Amino acid sequence: MTATANGVALRSPEGTSFVFDAGALCLEFLTTGSPGVLSGHDALQTPDDLARWCAASRLRLAPGDLHISDGEFRAARWLRDALSRLTGAVAAGRPPRPPDVDEVNQAAQLPPLVPQMAAGGAHSRYLPADAFQVLSTVARDAVELFTGPLATRVRECGAPDCSLVFVDTSRPGRRRWCTMERCGNRHKVRSLRERRSTETQAGDGEGAER
Image 1 (cartoon, one colour):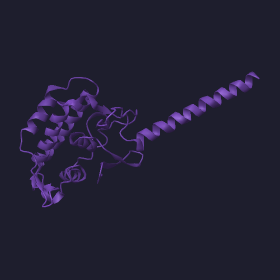
Image 2 (cartoon, one colour; image 1 turned 120 degrees about the horizontal axis):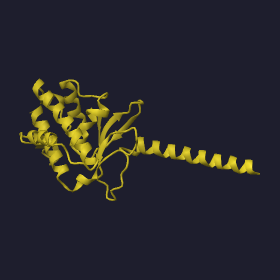
Image 3 (cartoon, one colour; image 1 turned 180 degrees about the vertical axis):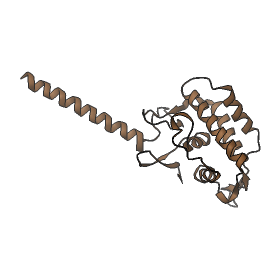
Image 4 (cartoon, helix red, strand yellow; image 1 turned 60 degrees about the vertical axis):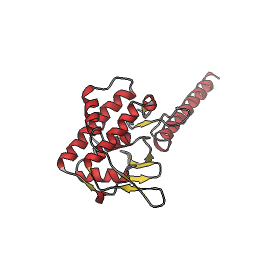
């Protein structure tokens, strides 16, 4: 997973690389895996994995600036899994489970990351931090998302074999795919093949009637 201007670079199970913009930090956290359908893909196995995600995510937090204890890493896994279940419920129009809401709220109570400004006025970096500050920042982002106007735009990719979740920030609000680069194009290819197959079958039928 690597950072890009508009998302993170991911690799599909088939080995294809693509850029995914989840639209929110808390949803970006779910690209590391989740319980359930993504339990076989878990990129959060060690504290170093969490540090790599922090660097690749929109936080752009340098691994050398982050201290992660074993307890903090376990808390990261708990928060991610709670966020995954909560997000799935919201995307499906179901009320989230109270224990998952409690997990997010508890993490959000901790002090968040402290941003720094460069001399020129641009965002520079975060102060050296511990992982609990990262988790608080992620949890606060989730609270803002799921209690705000974009909560109704939290969606799962429309492809039947993709479970990536995003918030649709587009003006028309008609985003269906995690990215056109991957699932959108695959849908177009499948639709084209089905249309051509239907046309071929119809042509064969007309020929047989003659």
